[in-house]
Image (cartoon, rainbow, N blue to C red):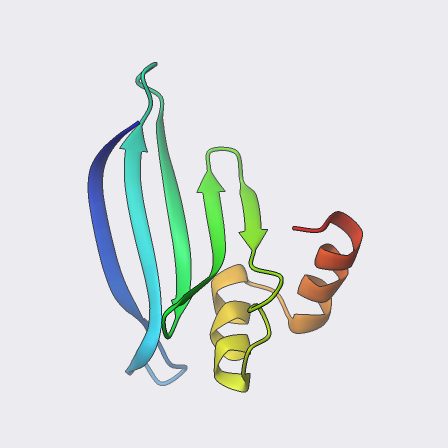
Length: 96
């Protein structure tokens, strides 16, 4: 795998302000077959909470840290586009 680009951005509050300690990290890469893909990470404080992988669409969640705090939960929900109940159900069902 060859990394082409990495970008780190603070997440935004509902009022459009940058939120400290809540980040999205996008890594653009390609493999040896020249197939492009992205990995997008949600980092809360010093922990990676969730990862979205495309083009597969696979989501991986740290089962120990996914619900660490109210703030982590708020921005995890924003990152995943779902509520806590939906995420908890997916973890229980599939162990994501």
